[in-house]
Amino acid sequence: MATYAIGDVQGCYPELRRLLDKLRFDPAADRLWFCGDLVNRGGRSLDTLRLIHGLREQSVVTLGNHDLSLLAIAERKPDAQARVNPELREVLFAEDAPVLFEWLRGQKLLHHDESLGWTMVHAGLSPFWTLKQAQRCALEVERELSGPQRGRLLRNLFGNRPAAWTNRLQGVERLRAAINTLTRMRYCDVNGRIDFEGKGMPGTQKPGMYPWFEVPGMRRRDTRIVCGHWSALGRFAGLGVYAIDTGCVWGGKLTALRLDTDEPSYVTVDAEPHRKRLPGGD
Image (cartoon, rainbow, N blue to C red):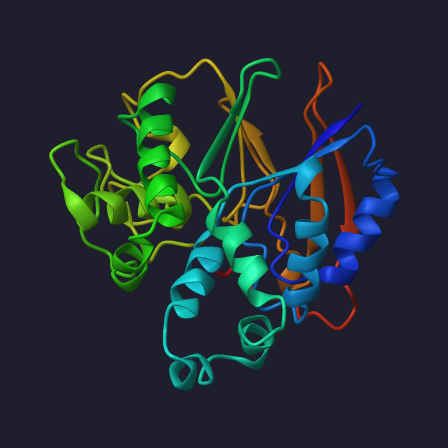
């Protein structure tokens, strides 16, 4: 039995199929962890969602910012939905869209496996969070997303304020701060304030900003963390963090990381030839 974490797919369906073939993935024995951003920009988001939904008994998903954006758009009226890009429209107006959205709303913001010693999140963790605090914050969001009042959160999902998590936050602002930390963060300062504009490689950030996993004085966590979201960072391993968004949608690679072995190992496939090589997106 093998367990693999897979980086940001973003609708790159052919590459996902090739990666599963290369892994010799066996649904009867193996397990998949998806780091989020299943959809958008790769051209085949609907096929990607259908494939992962079909493997839902063998998979764990942590939602990314693109997945949450899609869920927010799904709460809008049809005329507003019709104005989004064609790839997302195909998902929104698919016959099985209600089934796919119900499933997607029930996915996680953070997943921890004690037996494997691994934690998965899409983007990052607040420098002040212990693992237990991060789990509690993620669970608050997960309950809201899958509950009857989800529309309130999804209508107020977007925004850069508050830019830092504090335990004093309440209501929608508290949930938005947790979402921004878990799904959008790359750089932050020593107070946990996120730089939402910084997307480049370490060394290009503004003064006083640090990669989220290098903030001075951050809390120690006795777990290895696998994440995606930061394609400009590429494949990174250090400080207990394994980043595996290798920019497939930008012409890079789609990466899987094996988690159940003493030494994590990588398996990759190249992006389809038509994908343009561009700097990391969001």
